[in-house]
Length: 181
Image 1 (cartoon, rainbow, N blue to C red):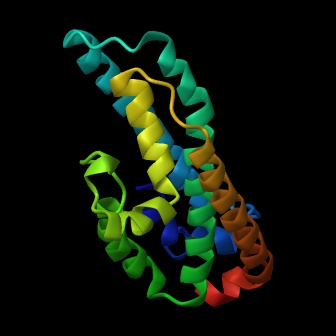
Image 2 (spheres, helix red, strand yellow; image 1 turned 60 degrees about the vertical axis):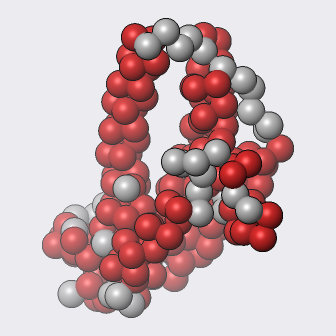
């Protein structure tokens, strides 16, 4: 959600970008922060449901303190990249929105990873969201500590995306108002 909405943030807020001296990165990051608040509310609801159904994971919820920053890094980095790309080419935001559905189905959100056929496993394993989703499931539902090695892959992808985003922001930032005007 944060990435989809952030992709169009520069275009949607062009009137503020042209009139106020606000760092451009704050626009996509505001969408990410908004999604983070909704994520927190969702976690509170999930916690209530799990406790009310008798599933207690206890101390494992503390593992979210390690997983959440990785998810936030991936989201913020992708948000900056796609916001910059959308400022350069206006068809990026609808493409990002359309790409979210296949991304959802290549991430083991609604199915456990062991059900994926071997031939398709490489797609799921290369998806940087897979370790994050599996870690969430392990911590919140099964009450197990996740395999932390997968989160290193997610962190590495997030850092590369962030570097790309910062390079794009440096390139696009100074002329952003003119591009959007």
